[in-house]
Amino acid sequence: MTKYIFVTGGVLSSLGKGIASASIGTLLKSRGFKVSMLKFDPYINVDPGTMNPYQHGEVFVTKDGAETDLDLGHYERFVCVNLSYYNNATAGQIYSSVIEKERRGDYLGRTIQVIPHITDEIQSRMIEVAVRDRPDVVIVEVGGTVGDIESLPFLEAIRQFRLKKGRENTLFIHLTLVPYIPSAGELKTKPTQHSVGRLREIGIQPDFILCRTQIPLTEEARRKISLFCNVEEENVIQAIDVNNIYEVPLRFEKEGLTEKIMRRLNLKNRKEDLKDWERWVNKVNSAKRRVKIAIVGKYVKMKDAYKSIIEAFTHAGAANDGKVCLEWIEAEEITEGAEDRLASFQGILVPGGFGLRGIEGKIRAVRFARENGIPFLGICLGMHCSTIEFARNVANLRGANSTEFDPDTPHPVIDLLPEQKEIKDKGGTMRLGEYECRIEMDSFSGKAYKRPVIYERHRHRYEFNNKYREILKKAGLKIVGIYPEKDLVEIIEIPEHPWFVATQFHPEFNSKPQNPHPLFRDFVKAAMQKNP
Ligand code: GLN
Figure 1 (tube, rainbow, N blue to C red):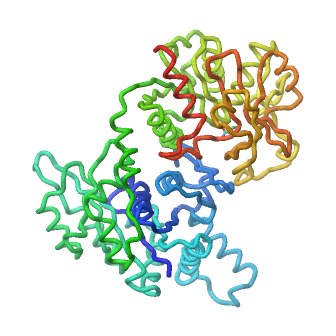
Figure 2: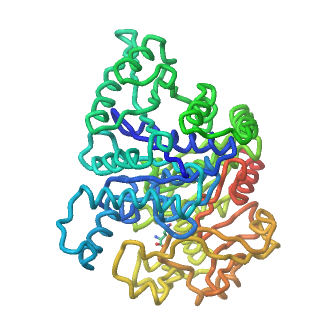
Figure 3: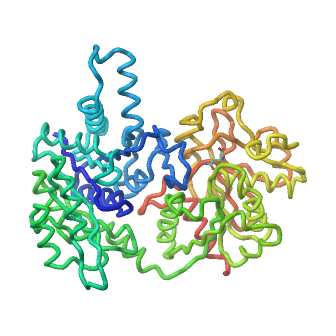
């Protein structure tokens, strides 16, 4: 019998429900249980793929090509699993599948309603995870905040689910904020009381309350929350602010959360090994060396848009006994003559992105890195910019560009594949998910991966144009990674450079704390060797 843990959020968003859910995953996994994850997003978009990064942050791409919420990235990193399209469900998906069934006539003339049809569909998504992944425990995070109109069908569905599966198989955890008010010198429990009140109104009594707090939870606050929220004092858990998100599982463990969850769900300890995780966290916290890397991008005011890149740098920093200090540079600000701003960095990264804004600034950043021997990593759009820069400034192809930015360019070094040209719909139609790549071993990438065949995740429409392969190769560009089935260029490098790699895929999605991505690891290593 699969057990279900439901994580809801109260008071306000951004309290770290995703990290809390992922951390509970880390803890149960450390006790030998097989864990799977499910994120419900109450918005009507079918997936976040069509959303602006300013609205939503990063779109995390799974191995099988689903465009999902960025919390799935946390789950993969914390629980060390590969997730799938069925591990993230939006209201949009739930409604469209109900409507599709209605059109097919599956409901045999009945009136289709939120209860039971939408709520049944939500529950079927929870069961699907158990059927496909065969876990001991599924952790279900309900997106949004209790009290939102959109979250209601999801909360109603989990309430019904408890009724069906029983108390010993389901657990409700509610994350709230316990703010410290300096003028009163007190932690305030009222917002928590109200938000648990809303939950109880719809029939959900939380078993645990995680209290996000700036300062340690006082006994008095704990007592009050317990009394007013009807939760045992020992199940009021402190979730104190931390500098390093990977510490959260260790903090919860200290509060005895793992034992308490196991007791409630009648799970028997199978092993215990949080030691590796703890060692790694200590390594991150005590790393001495510092390395300064610039990210030249378009969404730099919205750091969540680059979540997996930031995390990949944490992993790569630790692997090199150091910490990567990231600086965010708005690509539009790298105007002609402003490139010197980049001179003090030991590494430059140009990340993925869409659309024309900032492109010329990114191309200037690539040129600066290439000409000044600054270690460079280009990802997806960053690889497009690297190709354009090389074509224009080394191979003398004047006006070279991607047809994404200039449909009439005389040298379309980046272009759509014929099959992409026919696609009209925007949602879910990019080249998505994992593809094979063959690597030439005598290259920066070959030395990093140390194996000739790799699999990496994609999310793009435009590709390196093979018509320009020979010209660019003759000018000194090295093509070191190929997707064999379609002969597509996956990795380019500049050999006469300390370290210059640009990839069509997104390596950041595959980086894990104790298994840092080889390209990020070697990029940081090269950056450390460069004098600041
Ligand atoms: N806009 C480019 C494309 O669609 C790059 C996408 C990306 O960087 N993820 O191909």
